[in-house]
Image (cartoon, rainbow, N blue to C red):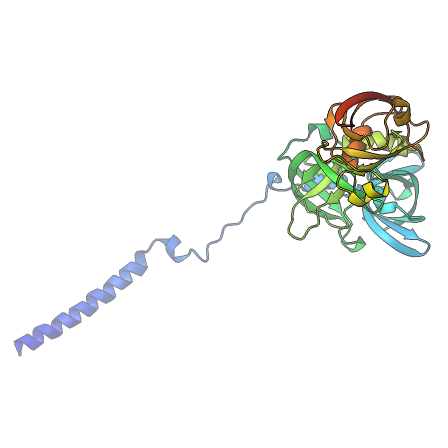
Length: 362
């Protein structure tokens, strides 16, 4: 009997001690442990966490460019007001945004629409300048210096990806690279020209073409022009450096045509088997890399310098030439009247000649 009483008392005491322990555990448990899911702190967004001030400086200077052929809209892109005088506002966009159009409407962030006139455009620079009545202009962009840009700098774009429905879309990124040499498709021929551009990971989509690439101070440092669109590639967009662009803009806004030098030859890449065959040219398999001259125009700079059909141009001013696009790039660094050195391969050996450049045939 005594043993049963002791066992019963032990059970009762164990229960009491257990209950007391549980009470004390919850009563004196640190407050943060019991409130971790209820106590959330408010986060204050400071100016260093936002680019809104830089965006405000340029936002209303950005426009949508709507291009028409007859009554049919054929393309949309982005542009920005970079200048204003007593009568007009002046807009920069890409040439491919307005190419082939005969009527142009400018849509502002205020939703007002103004008809525009193209003052000048250039296919190789991929730039165009338009003018509009100043009455709808509420802001003018500040132009910065692309020469001051460093890899890793914060940048953003403003544009109308996909179309006017998304006017004023802002995307942010960094400068991912400078002096990128990118092949450009012209007149349905792949790799006809090479552009020197800046690379950014800020999202650039169809409709952003012609829009500004802007630094953290709200200054335009580039004009968005190209994007790698292969499905497996993301975050690679390209912008024309503003320093380069403004050299062309000064002429285009005056209606002046961009005059480029020419050699006066037709060119064939060494890998274009059919092209070589059509000109009746057989290339020595041991010949160096370069571009092949298909024919030489009469009284051209090339003919005057002694270049001939079948010659392989390997260098221009000691810069290696590997394609027609690269030759055009090196050639268009120069002006009409300049003299360049052309290295060529003929009959198993290399030689060089000086060529005085003339105007490009129009």
